[in-house]
Length: 640
Image (tube, rainbow, N blue to C red; front, side, top):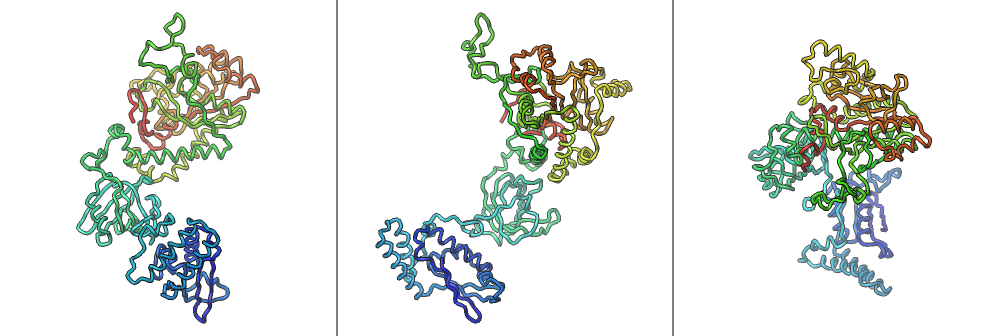
């Protein structure tokens, strides 16, 4: 583009014209560049005449020359093309200008033809010439819409018009301050109140607990919007344009003063399962595909997302590497045998199942993996292999357990956070777990304040106080023997109060035991360490100071949940590990790769597992773990 400037005593006359040599530049690029220069150089001019950017572009396309007369302060220290005074812009398309442009355009076309340009290159200039000639005809109709789009231009949000609206979308969580900008709010209708000349619509897009009230004044709406109001129902999806203004009511600080309403998806109120009333969490599980639209499940989802992000952030800042371990495995990490089998064999026709010679046992060498395969119960063993090469790693992914449990604390599909640390012992694992939980809960207290306030009001009155205490107070650490002694003394006072009153060394603590220690005895998060060998997994390191009666393991108990974290120092001694495998009936040959870690450069290492859904229930103050995950899997249920 070429800029011609003519200075007068009180004005500047500027003319933008395209270079004759710019024929290689696509027309779209030239007009876009011209528009950008106009807007950047004379910002504010369009507001002065209420002239939209599409009008700029339309004028540029039709005239190719734009005369601009501006009243500016010609201070030599100020860039004259960014005026300091109010500007006034006029676009002139006089007859003499048009005739001159037509002649110039004809010269351009002749030059292109003489240079051997292809027809496709000349065609745009011919169209422009015809458009210029049309402007000389008094009764000439305006250019058709298709001509305005011949370059496949896409208007930017700033170039939006009422007829072709592409506005900046604002999520309800960000709609906090009034603004003159017209923005778009999109979401689902929670409530509708209609009056003679007004309608109040609460819209929630899931970004926050609170939606935004949209005020629709019939006087400021087009006919289509007014008709759409009659079709508004709870649950329908909408797109509403307007300005964010200070609210006239007392329930919210801002509201959307709507200028346009469009229903995106209708929702018949008579069949919508989520009427405006409080539903039980049990009922909501039966419509798990719709329950994220409720306050409770939406808040759980936001807190869950924040927790996951904070966990990743913590480990990344601590220098841990994120490792993705396999979901399909041939190894039973826990040695409990409660695993889901993975097979491609035809189980619908048992006569086709391959059998071993002279046996009723299935020949899994004919299966997909050539051996029995399962969904993993833990990523720990794989994590150990990487920790023994990279130092500190963590996994965070789905795990599976075929445990026939219907309790509020168990799922068949759940997620585990499992860090593994080389050159570490049990104390290192406890220190890391405590730091991680304090960091994660602190982050959520800050980022999900409104959601936690909701849970504190409707589900657990002491939630925020308990979470704050977890962040600020050091965790208690006691041995398993001490825990058993405390429990025995308490149970002896009134055994009838306890479901499991028989507690002794070797007892696997029940939830009621764990919660009493955390909620009543210490009123704090509690590490219990040095558990009996008989109730813990084969890979946990034997304690040498008590003859191997206990293992160097720990559980973290928290109020409201019970066990939240389980960890240990791993057994790094090859001969002892092989012996422990044989004791629990595991074939060491199946774990040859795991034993190789002890054969080649073995090191002391430790780690732990955090049940992610249990963490969600703890932070949200909800009782049932089935409400802490999008689609819970448990015995008898695999819906959705």
